[in-house]
Image (cartoon, rainbow over all chains, first blue to last red; front, side, top):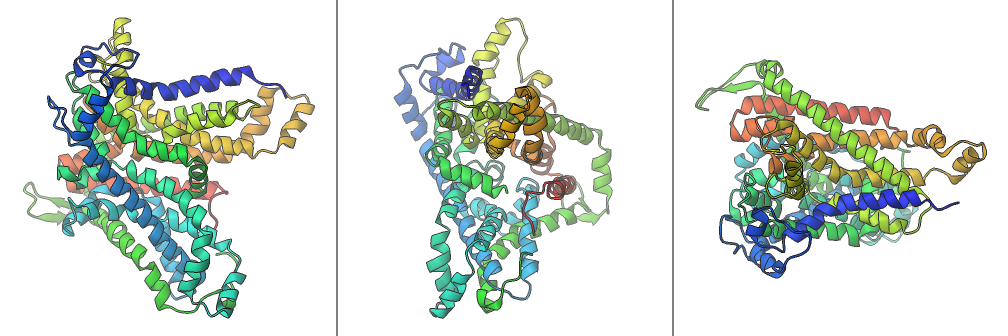
Length: 278
Length: 297
């Protein structure tokens, strides 16, 4: 087949459209605030990169913004994303295992109770969920931030599908060896599930990191603020006099972890994405 | 359900499976069914001005919401916004996927360079586009103004809408790209070769062979993109325009937020949440009903 020169052109154009906003952000994070405020953002990096990032990290920008240290907000986001991912995977592994390897009264009911939750993203029921959190006095806490976001059926269904492909003879063999269900889970099911767990972890980490509306509602205490909420608070109404250099440095730090996860774990990412949506 | 498993392929017991299911059931019950029930219940109540007492008002909140011209305007705006985001993101992604599926060198490098925006949060996408299109400090915002176009998305509602649409679609293209590319690569080469031998032109082959084979993927993506535009774009709008100027970019989910959190009108906000739930359930139903490659039970 012949090579297709137009394809390169279009793909390069696509890559540039994706990359240019990031490039401008990187450039913006290396200049001083007044250069940007005057509207003179150059197209080449400036000399202040290290200083801006250090200021953003420590929250020492001074001036107009009252930002939290990005280091603290990144830590909050990291804890939130890791706990959501790990928690969802753990509860889903257990419930999928129960549904696939046992027959017990109420099995179909529990299955449907979990299945229905597929339909409603957290945003839809956000205000009533918030009130439940108030009733439980869980607002303004890391637990309140994390636990409600673990209620989702996607991971359970994915593991269920996968468990159904594990040869059933393994169960018989385990029984012959005198192994109970928990031992079977630990020694057979869990090791076989490693790639699925990794793929799901990548997707859920990004899902957790990118949560926005829920942290915005549930957290008032600024020491628990996540990086995304902190970032948009720094912008406020978008005045030209904002310390845009610090904001841009914070934006870069806010997107670096999930982007790095996607790029470095690309194979698992694509597997996880195409399989959770199937 | 799938094939029945013989007893030798199962473990015995009733307490253990319930114990294993407990964490998920508790979380689902507390943070899913309880709030969903509360939303339905509250949507039937109305609080007095001081929030001291509430009375049962039946479906009045729904009637009020559905008769409220500003809500209907939000609804229409949401359809316009979601349709534009989905359309733009789908067309751009399909186009790029077709290019990446061609016989080119470095296809995997291009793929990496095109998928990473998936990881950029909607709120961050908004910040990136704000920085380019800010009327005073943005490189393109200034260019537009210098070219004599009065560009200020903080004053002009249409411009604000355009900006939130582009920023939202920009982030969603890579998701669609991954699925379209996977769909294209699963089309057997022999089918394409047969069409080529029959003398069909590339364009004709695309519309008569490739596109019909991709249509389940495209339909599935359409639903996912609509759901994304309905809900996940809250971050884009909150960071970029706060629903303004006026109400020019206030979508339904943004309105649930302003009515419930800012204006503390719980009955109305709950009724709106219930309407949104019905919309999503409807969309999901359509998806399950018409897209066969979804899970089978």
